[in-house]
Length: 125
Image 1: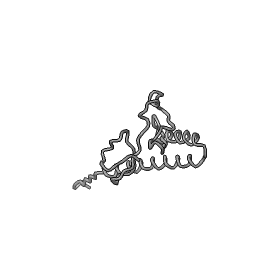
Image 2 (image 1 turned 120 degrees about the vertical axis):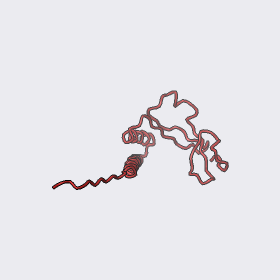
Image 3 (image 1 turned 45 degrees about the vertical axis):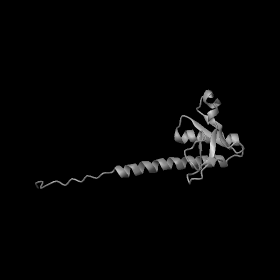
Image 4 (image 1 turned 30 degrees about the vertical axis):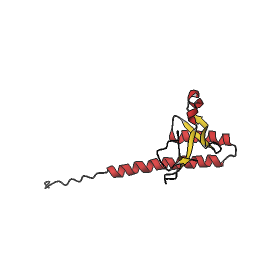
């Protein structure tokens, strides 16, 4: 009955914890996309869809503010279409319109606030 020795096992679970956190973040993203998808398919009224989408995003992500931009194809800019949590002074500023670019360099499509996106091969849409 005497203790003859000890065996100690130490395992680093840092990678497992990080992986679990990534999975949780991905689940939140998927839940948000699913809720927005359901909202968008529930009505044909754009304003209703935008407001319901903002509500769902707030509910799931618990964010302070939400912005939804729509593309003005004629001007190649994204225009703030709906928002919550932004001050009227912020919304009235011209910088809310974002220039849209077609990326020729293989980077996914995106937008920039100025014409200088840093990629030589990119051009405005």
